[in-house]
Each structure stands twice: as structure tokens, then as C-alpha cells.
Length: 464
Image (cartoon, rainbow, N blue to C red; front, side, top):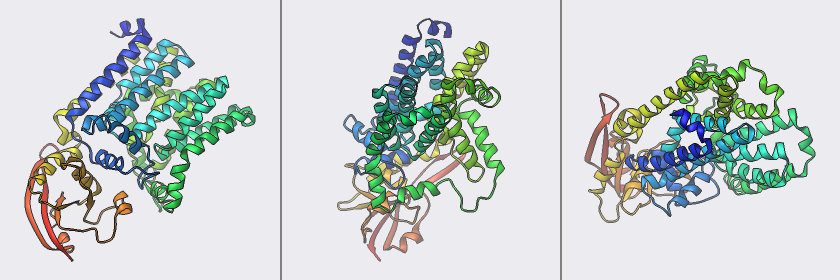
């Protein structure tokens, strides 16, 4: 089968991307939203220059897909579009740098690994980050190596949009500066370089203004997120995070990529390879360092595997590792198939945080009375209520939980009579807020392989 694909690399690439696009759009219709997806969808109904948790791009993109559909598959058009466009630009960059064969191999690697398929399923700020990282990598490569003003302009635009996607995008800026300082200092005298920087700054300025108006609250949150004030050293967290890379990018592809980066020196002699290598190494080294002090989520390194897919494909071709690639590709497909099937048939095991909420809100809907207000015990529970209740009423968080966008929007005396959905029995906590608290219904669902979890629905009135 692979031999047939390589006979027409460009056609095969477009076919693969089109298939994944259509398949994922249909597949996503069978899954309930994740709580974070519901939270970001809620943002799309209140657009602004920034949000407490992240920059605003995820809300902007969901806002656009809302015109197509606000069903689960409609919300997830953001990530389906983002992943598919990323695959397309990986092909374009690989073809620009090498040839069609390596370009197709790059797409096969990218499109087969489980971290990308997780990206096809869940809509998060990583979706636009991956999209605009791919586009910025492509246009910055063309700008640096061919010097056209149009490519510098497009680099500035894509870089600005990437900065609006997730704060991790700053690592791309560091990567570019390192490359320019080490390999192409002449670019610092090129007016187009400063034009691109100005365009990026203009695009990012509304987000910077929003942060300035809100005491840089979002920057402060992200600087504290995944970090520690004590700087206690936890080697086991590093090894856990390091080992996880072999899962999300598969053992064979990760091993080949890491071997190239650590043991080989080809990229020192070749500016193009060095450019790609930096796009991988800067991200990996940054999060490897942070993993010594705090537990890192595996998706944090996802941008590294954009350039990583191309570098791995180059290695397979350069060293003629045909059998190794086939083994790696087969392993990737098996792991992805297991993950895909797990999401559809064993959601309570694979991602129990998504399971049961839709049904709990549907049960709560049966108890709704006129003029009821709606509350959750957590930001995601409140977001689920807004998404799955009829007419999408405003919701809020009634019980103490971490600071979120709800706190920034909230007005004083926000508690009113209505219904509260919780994931634990919260009778005493609610009685501290209301004089009348009644448990009116519960819903038990599976959790993991053998456990259960229970949702609780309370009717509350007469605030204290």
C-alpha cells in the first residue's frame, strides 16, 4: 500500500488529508464535548481581546464555526481545519526543502501519530497554535532563505495570529532569534525583518491592551501555571514526561528524531536542517527543563513535532531506513486506532472527564422552572450547563473553585434561586450560601473500568 502512495506523492497527500478531514468531522459528531471545549465555546459568545486562561484565538475561531453549526462536530471544525491545514503546510515545507517523497513521508508521520489525532478530536488553544505554527514555520523559512518581502509580510501575519493562539508561541520567536543570531545575522539589517515584526506586534496589540487593562492577569496566570515557587527538583517527573514523548509521537518516530538531534551533526553544516532542528529542540528543551520542577502535560510539546515529522522523514530517507519507517508507521496506526476506538466505545475509561455530563444536564433540564438560574461546582460544569441546556442560558460557578473567566465576568450578588449541578455531595457547602437547599435528583455513570461517579442536582433558594 505504501508503495502505491509513493507513486503519486502529491495526489496521495491530498487524498490522505481530505480523508482525515471528512472522517474526523463525522467521527466528532458521536462524542460529547469536553468541559474545556464547552468553556472555550462559551468564550465565543463573549468575544474580547483576551481571556484569563488563554489568548483569544480559540474563541474567534469557534465564533466563526458557530455560523456553520454549534453542535459538537461544529465546534470541532476548528481543530479539524487546523490539523488538516497543518498537514498540508508540512507537505509544502517538506517539498520546498527536500522532495515530494520526503514530503509525503512527513505527512504520513504527522497524520498517523496519536497526539495529532487527539488534536483532531478535542478543540483547545493547541488547535490554532498548531495551525499557525505550521504556517509561520513555512513562511519564515521562505522569508529567510529566499528573502521575498511578501514572505516576510506573511510571516509577520502568521506569527501575530500564532501569538493570539497560545502563549507557547513565544518559543517560536526565541527559535527564530537564535537561528538569525547564529546563522543569518545579515537579516538584522534587512528592513523586511522589522516590517514583519511590526505587523506581528500590531496583530497582537489588542491582546496586549486587554492584558494591560486587566493588570496582566492572563500573563501572570500562565507564568504561574505549571511552575513552582520552591524550585524543588523532581527527576521522576522529568523521566515520566520524557517517556511520554515516546507515546505521543510513537516509540520508533521519537527514537529516530531524538537520535538525529542528539547524536548526529548534519544539521550544524546545513542551515535548512538547523532551522528545522531548532524548531524542535527549543520546544523540547524548554519543557524538559520545566518538567524537573512540575508535572507537564504531554500536549505542551506538540508544536515540536511539526518540524519533528519533517526531520524524522528526512532521516528515514537519508539513511534508507525503509523497514524502520514501516514498523514505526504500523505502530503509530495501531496506537491511534486503539485511541480512536477507545473514545467511541470506552469513553468512561479513556476520557472519563467527558463522560456523563451531557446526560446529567439533560436530567437537570427536566427540573427547570421559569426564572431559574443555573450553577455548577466548577468552571467546566458551569460551561456544560450553558452548552447543553436549551437556549444556552447564562451560567456561573456557585462553589469555591479555581479563578477563571467566570470570576472576571461576575457581578456582585450573583447567586439567585435555581439549580446547581455538582460532581460530589455539596449539601453543607450550599447551605452556607442558601437557606433552602434540596437534593432533587442524582445520576450514576461509569468511571474507569469498575468505578462509578455520581452527579447531584440541587434546587436552591433564599440566598443568605
